[in-house]
Image (cartoon, rainbow, N blue to C red; front, top):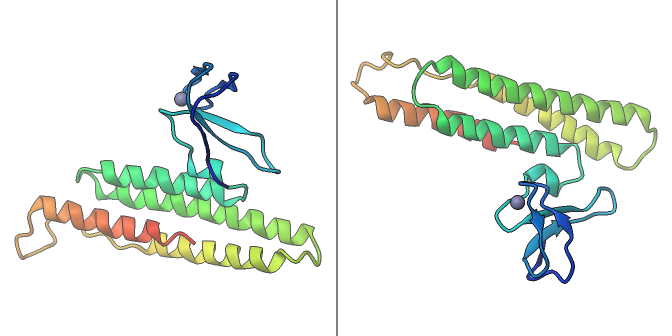
Length: 167
Ligand SMILES: [Zn+2]
């Protein structure tokens, strides 16, 4: 879905769905609309979430992916288990959505989309496996005197590499 930008509205389109601020006449705003979902409006200070730009089940995955990226960025080297569990949560979401695809497939015989859904489901499952399989290092395991900042950076990198593999 594409975002449409309106430079100055002639009549108020209503409220921003992000911050709730009413958009007044003459102000800019942006919107997305599709055949399958209600029109969504944002003021110029707010951004659309990835899930608002897609009509597919993948929206849930993209939101979780975005949230996990953020968790990884904010991780400052405390318990390494926090990184593993962030990835495990994301893997859980991927598996749930894979299951939804599977359900849609079994509810629809001979739908031409089912091949595509099967592919999505399979790639989500294998991505979930990869996320759960990331091996982080504990700090202090390195004998070469790695600095803590470097270690933190390496662990974050491991996590975001896996997150980016999202199908
Ligand atoms: Zn707003």
